[in-house]
Amino acid sequence: AQTVTQSQPEMSVQEAETVTLSCTYDTSESDYYLFWYKQPPSRQMILVIRQEAYKQQNATENRFSVNFQKAAKSFSLKISDSQLGDAAMYFCAYRFNNAGNMLTFGGGTRLMVKP
Amino acid sequence: DTGVSQDPRHKITKRGQNVTFRCDPISEHNRLYWYRQTLGQGPEFLTYFQNEAQLEKSRLLSDRFSAERPKGSFSTLEIQRTEQGDSAMYLCASSLGGLAGVGNEQFFGPGTRLTVL
Image (cartoon, rainbow over all chains, first blue to last red; front, side, top):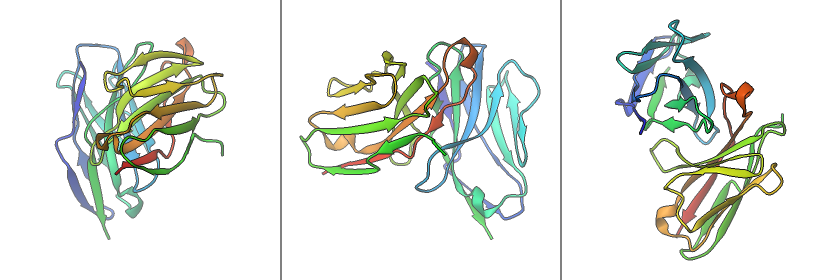
């Protein structure tokens, strides 16, 4: 079974600084996707960034980028120029590329942004 | 904006009562997923539908849980004889499925927070 581990329950960053959230996963599959989702307080989960396992190039979405290390099964999220609105729970998620496509989530990291 | 909607947003019930939640997916999405999220944890997969067919159920979905998607549009999740351990956020998500949609993302609703007293 696939597992996703986020070892940082909480992280704190100063506004305008950079922060990196860690994620490791375990799978025996080779064709899969990895995601970072953001869940603001009392608001719905939204997709931040997605990485296809077959792509060597790390995904980037504006201030958000990932460091995907397939051999190490590591998938970290870097947030540059942190903003107050970035404060939220961040979940790393794995999806095997099969018919079901259900997501397996990590336990989450609470990010606090200090003004 | 016609995103995923869920009703009710909050439900408080007494142990032993039955509850039913509704999810309305994005209209053109043929896949619908239910997840459960307990406090301080990540969501856990419960079940998913492709159109009206329920194709997979997690072992977390005990016999007291039943989900339906009768016309391939909205879905309901019913919990019978609720227990305190059922207290959680129940999340619904939808996506495009099939070969062309394998890489498509799941869009989440706001969730229904269930409290069992």
